[in-house]
Structure formats: structure tokens, C-alpha cells
Length: 345
Image 1 (cartoon, rainbow, N blue to C red):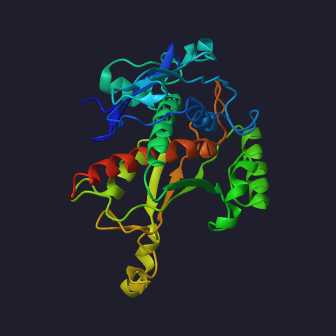
Image 2 (image 1 turned 90 degrees about the horizontal axis):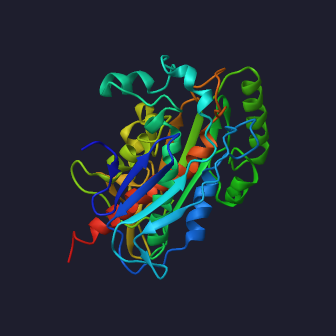
């Protein structure tokens, strides 16, 4: 297999290159009879677009108008493969011609060339972050299908850190602030500091990374397959496949290295006749299986590699990765929910 697909029952395959005619996705295994809203898919794709006019994000401005080619009839899924595309319209090939014989530091130019003996030097081709719009289209469909399950799952990502600037820990009451600032931080005052910091980095001709937190609420107990298809393992694979993602932590993450077992263990209590963990140091996963507690993950996002270079690039990609990360989580969760239906009669 060439590594362009993910999922067992809900299977997603992406295709296309940065400067090709279009990029797209094929989804196989989507249950039939689900009402699909093109508007909702477009809204998810629009969240992935550059979040400002260039001080933070790339100046490449693609319309990213989603077209559904198959798998939908009368506004509902047919059970057949769903194909969707967006066209690449705002390409400037001349900005990349000079890279034909040059390997860009931090990019996949060298490794693709060594592996295949040929590479698409126009924006990185298949290795470009442009490919992630395909994941968001698939993730949008996955979110729509997930909305039919009870209880309603919630997948929520936000910016926790940009460079040395850290926001306070997650607050439920501040969730509404995420879309009120271009860095998608829940703390408005820290968001302003992050924006100023990124702007100074941009002026210096450099780039910066950060940390995203992802939270899954209302996840059913029991998702995840032993031994190699653990839910955490599949989430990690999906999220680490996103360009620029360099690390992932669940629950206390690397903090467990400094904890004693008595501090890290989640003891059980009974509430209203139901057994549940008293704390959630494990981050919602035990033995690779969901506990019903919030699944909490943090992603380390590297600074964009294209610095002081001809072309159109992001100074900080962290805010744009959030929609992609949420989409990958939705794809994995739906796949595991469908698999769980075969685990018990």
C-alpha cells in the first residue's frame, strides 16, 4: 500500500498535489441514508483557510469550493464511495521554478527525491500542506455521521501555546472566544500577545511553532481494539500524519515521568450507581480503550520550514492545523464506532 488511505470500515483516501488541477478525497464505507449538507462541509473547509490577511498566514488565497462527485443522491449518502474535490486556482508556478535543483531545509524535497527518484518541486507536490484540505472534507462528513450517535460527541481544538507564549489551561466558559481571534486561543489577552509575537517573527523573516490541545467530550466507553489498533495508537497515527506535527501527548503526557504511581493512578468512585474514574490523568484512555472521560491530547506543531524564501508561506501554521486535527480525530472516532458495533451482540 502506498500510504494514501486511513481507516478500516470508514476508509479515507486522499489524492492530488499542491499545484495540480485539483485535490480530492474518496470516502468508502460511509453508512447509507445519512443526510449530507454541502454547506456544513464547506463551513469546515473554510475554517482551514488562512485566518488573516497575511501577517500570520500564507498569502495564497484558494476559494476551496467543494464539489461532490459521487456517493450522494437526493441529499443523502447511498452507501457507495463519496468523492469530493476542490480545484487549485491560486497557483503561482514561477515562484517555485528556482527550486527545481534545490532541496529546501525542513521540507520533504530530499526524502521524496531519494525514495522515488523524482519529485514535484512546485510547492512540494503531494507533501504540501495543501493536501490537508482533503482530510477536512472527509472529516466534515465524519462529523455529520457522528452527530447521529448518542450521546453527541464533541471534538474541540484550540491553541494552547505559540512559541514561548502560553495560554491558561482549558476553560469551558471561554470556548466561545476561539473564533474571535486569528490564533484561535481561548484567552483573548494572551491571543493578542501571540499575534504580536508572530508579527515580530514575520518581520524578522522567520517562523514559529506552538501547541494545540484537542479534547473529545462524550466519547462512549469501550472504543479501541487490542493490541495494535488501540484508540490512542490510531489517534496518534492520524494526528502525526499531519504535516508539521512533531509530537503528541495524552492526559498528563510527558509529565508522568515526574509523577509517582499514587499521583498518576485514576482511582474509581461510584456516582449515581455508576463506576467512573475520580480523576483523569490517563486522558480518557486505559489499555488503549476509551474510559468515557474526556480524551485530552496535545500536539506539538513545528515552525513552518519556508523562511525568507520566495513563495507564499505561513509565519505560523498552528491556527490552521486545528481544523485538520479535528477532522482526523473525527475520521478515527467514526471508524472505531463502526467497528465497535461488531464487537458485541
